[in-house]
Length: 148
Image (cartoon, rainbow, N blue to C red; front, side):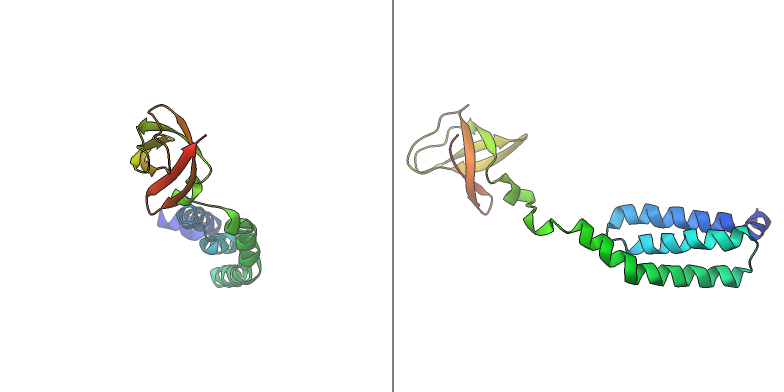
């Protein structure tokens, strides 16, 4: 089996590229993708029978070039709207939920949004169970709501 891999370097580079892309799916920062690009570039000299040292040089040069020139552009494209994107509890602001436990006037109750049950408070009036409410803000993990 090892003899087959020694005679077919292109297969080794293909496996390395596939492993790098698989690892990249877990990280998402395009760093390991650059090594996958280097491995794909090394498949060409391996297929035409170049010496192994030349394939390694092609791998190293293409990987470094893609780290310096391609990765910054890919990360910029990925993060171009990153500052506008809210996540976690910040993404709840403006959402509509349903009161799952009555919210007492100037007190607390519970609101269900997308299957998650949150502690909520309102100012002024009590809001009965089943009423739709809009999230207007939050303090820690307590949502501030008003009737929708």
